[in-house]
Image (cartoon, rainbow, N blue to C red; front, side, top):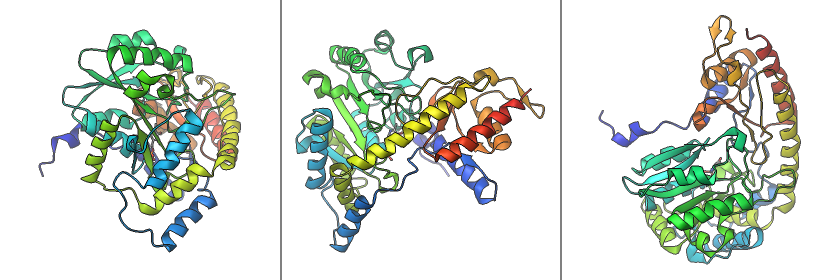
Length: 397
Ligand SMILES: *Cc1c(COP(=O)(O)O)cnc(C)c1O
């Protein structure tokens, strides 16, 4: 079979692949603790489920406007105003089938063959592949752990060429947990405005910031940068709604309408009842989000401490999202049962076999010296999983 060339340019999402392998071992009766999850372990709150059930019972089960119902757009506009001090009109908002789909639509609407898109690394696994699927070129800029994995203004300047079209930012970051301050974002904004770069700002972990940090959207730093920024967000992470598939974007009306045109010839509208549930999520979730974030904070501190107490492992305290991203490269070249651990994939395989713990190799995020552990699992699982990891690593020689 001759397949389209674009298929060979990309790989299946590696985070989903680890979950699949761990799930298979579980199904075979092996007791696996998974730190692979990219989603909250909490159930979707009942008031949100009820909104979907009501929508179903009322027969709200037909096509909707391609770019989302007005009620949801208004809830999104309200959220931007309330939480980010950002004012948008309806024609600046589009609702899509998840944040990933939103970013895909942006790429399809905006990128041409030859365009260079700057992606700081470590990056979310899907960014480079979504860029490739739009025939554009990902330009990976490796950030330094000593700079908390943040792209420095000089590093950004150094990567810009006449072909640069956009930069993809993700703060709080998956996988590193890095959160940019308003001041740091201001410097990036200055460069973007000077060089006329589009900023795609993936703010899906907005709610997950710790230690008294406040979240800043780069779009809120002035009119010039707001006009260049497409803010991406969604309900998956903040409201434990990963399966509902609702994400959204806000930005220049011309880009939003191009995205809507693409969506009209691919998915059409996002699911009608999930849109109704998302209105409820955005308007009435404050208590539940706070409770979830508080529990994540407790797990975060514990996991980071445990990781740092293991010889050969060191971990920056993650300031946002729900992942720890420890450096494990000092363990490379050590052996387990005579077999040498070569890289992050080897270490993840070793942990799965020897500790029965699933983690994601850093290579998936463009960094082979680290692994990613999600703390979106129960405190008890984290305790047991960390005990197992510690024990297994002691056995390396
Ligand atoms: C989870 C995630 C998304 C979007 O997820 P959806 O379920 O498609 O809404 C986007 N960006 C990052 C960095 C993520 O981790």
